[in-house]
Image (tube, rainbow, N blue to C red; front, side, top):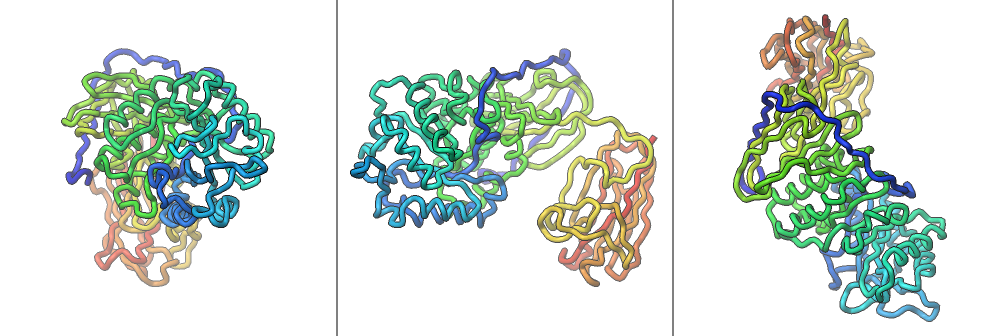
Length: 545
């Protein structure tokens, strides 16, 4: 449910138009210090506090707690960054910056230590000028680069946002290179983020100096600003690479100036551009809608893909856009973006995204709907202000011979308690925590450990004839649970175990799946709630031509 209504996305493939092309994705040669092999993810304090009294030690500790407690650390977020206004207006007698004792009575090092104890990283802010950007004019780092870098390193700083205010007209490359050299000389790995608003085209010269650089102005909490920063960031897309990131500024999710739909679009677009994901809202009070947006694992995986390629716009017109990002393993992420306030159909040819006509697995990264599609055109109905973000994968060669499905990559899956497990029982919620698959004392080496309700789908391409499995409730739930096991071939029910209790002896299922493009293994609840419904598919074997 987004913006008060359910959004239904229709994705279709049609006939091929035009031949496939080899798309020149190669980025310009770049250097990197290796400190940010994927776009940095974390929090920045500026929008949450600006320079008001709420920027203090307790607030930053609370953010660190929220990142861990709300699952954001597990989702990949790691930086807790303080922005402007943390220091006193004057340096001390030794020429060093001094944390404001009202805000940070224990100093910055104690705060950084707390963040590190949480398994997170700590960031700080200054400007490549005589003063920072706040009108109160806190000390900047121009001509103090060495002492400031040493101070930051002594505090345990991991990330420096380096602004551009009050720069006295000194050459930008010189100013940022000087700080880079000072940070490097400390021996502490500190990610350097250049914030000069794209004025000097840092993407053309900052590789080897910084790890990320702003491509436009400060982002406001409104739709026009998102569009402005999107366009500024798309232009230098080819300069993005591991350790060298175009930065369109913060994620505004949760600030309240836009709808959940618009925030979700921003998150989709930033991810397909391989942009840093730095949240600028108070995570201590994040709504369920905000959390659902910023923790979407499939979308984050697009952003964090190890190829590190920035998405490029391949089609646009009338406020409708197609942005494509190649991914490791031959997949493509495709964002179908409707910037207008009215629903629209967006259609593009597969050759524009680097594919020939053929069979593809198409996954909608928000609805999680997955299907096998054929043809050469991609079309989706996209509501106003929305982005349909797809992951498209070429279908692998058909299976031949006899296969255990535990050795076959699934097309899609859902599971009632954590992920389903391969060659072990379902266990608890973390992946890989199951035990040996065990039915009535008999252990099985291969199989699938699920928890109802569960659905695991595989693409077979019409080449397989039979599927057999031994099914039952795993012994790990100690006498409890009730489920039913069902097999579907192209959505047609072809085998059903009936109701199975823990005391029920293991059952053998056999299904005719001749000609089926897909097969689904389903575990349903037995009708007495889903607690303890650990259903095992032991030795699920397919025979294929």
